[in-house]
Length: 516
Ligand SMILES: [Zn+2]
Image (cartoon, rainbow, N blue to C red; front, top):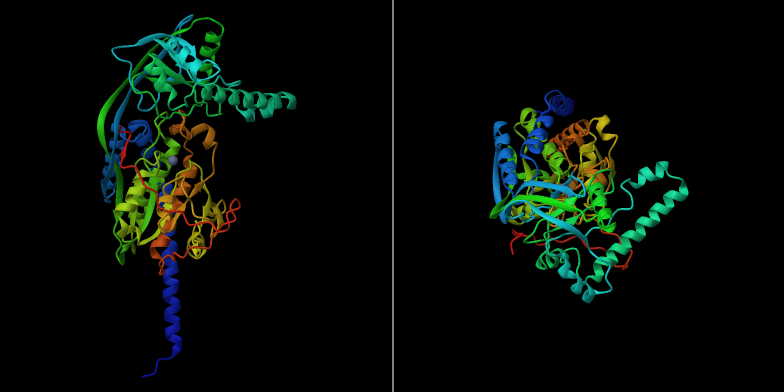
């Protein structure tokens, strides 16, 4: 029997039409679920306000992993914590710093991560500023003077106003003068530290060996009222970061001979070795379960604030995207995996461990979508040097609603990322991984690694838009009849050396961190 071509063509067109119709329905339902039943505010509250910051090795990090697993399970999604290493265990306690002479002021400051505590109650002491000595011998001669004192090792900022504020209001002459004053002061301070014979890592240990009561820093972030809070380098006495405003006041009092005294309570606990984890959640694929789309975000944070924009926002985008997909697309063609990585902040450790430990997954990745750089809506996606990235990402993006897509600039094939966040761990082994890069919302100066990285800085409209974007890209990646083509583009010449640039390579990770 001969079949006429016409009915076959008709049936084919019909099935393509039905397919497109189904796709549109899924995408509409993603948008509807994200908009009408958003869990983002609840997730953000639980992870930032209730659990708090998620420094590697702390009980809060562990709580966060447990919370994520039980949240996924509540949504009917399989989830587990995978141990990849161990880290120095530490728990932040109370920090309380008061000026007690020449007047009483409760100061704004906090101990740095992993800071030793004040032993047996508060420590009271006078203050001293690192002197401007001729050389390391002169510094050694001066060093005994720190005994029993708190030592100021950061410069006094010439102004607590950010540059943009000066630019807006100062006369041009005054603005230029301020910029120059700041440049000179910064240079002079770095010379002063160098002349001690130590650097900012080794100096605190020399000070505590000489009997200092503690070390005071002020790591201004460049915005109003914002400091960056990292880890302590002392082993015996506390290291405390003081707000620019209070630090400047103390500094001026010392310089003017007012002989200020402070009383410090710094409580913390050393907890020995703590296991370090990644949280992995997974919806198994139905047709190609061995192929994966990975929704990627680091879960850990520094602990000056609550790690809201670095990276609770990326975390909740991935969680919410998976929740939505579980609702509207419960039987994906490919497997969908969420990876919430530990210890990104110390060198992408959790994601590097995952890449090392799971070649069977990494070799079969259709796409990784990582979000890390803040709360803003996604404005940039690079092809990360994959020659055919446009054919996939570019095509998937056309299904994203115009009001989200119109903000996104793409760069194909782009260049492979060499670090910065966890997508780089995958790119290094040639797995197609992409950064959903955000609008900055003053990330660098106001929230990134600062004491102001808190819930109130989250821009939920943008985060919601990112969850929709991620869910749709994941859906399209899962449904794609083709497997992502991993061909690498020829990289441009390095402008410095004139040599062809090479694809980044996998770098070693730290599996045992913070332990001496
Ligand atoms: Zn981050």
